[in-house]
Amino acid sequence: MEPFSFEKLPEVIRVLFEKVEHIEDLLQGLQHEDSTENEILTIQEAAKFLKVTVSTLYTKVSRREIPVSKPGKRLYFNKYELKKWIIASRKKTVIEISKEAEDRIKTLNKHKNFV
Image (cartoon, rainbow, N blue to C red):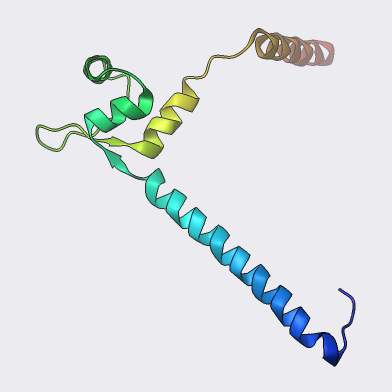
């Protein structure tokens, strides 16, 4: 940052104030994300979030395919856990599988050359 004169002080303070406001806005957005990230959902809300029917969700629960909490008779879902479950269920592409196979072959060849 370049030095500034006394005359430029009001402008520098204004810019600094704007930057602080921007940082505050970003932090408030992150806090909002955190609060909705760990949100507890009912079965209807979870079905809507996952874009499936309630009966499909009941089936997944009964097969123990999806993370769920059941304190008493009601089912509750953690939004963050549902997101993690979706990501963990991701299927690899053909390119990713081919790359893993090539890497595995290279590793095996390196070990083979050592022996």
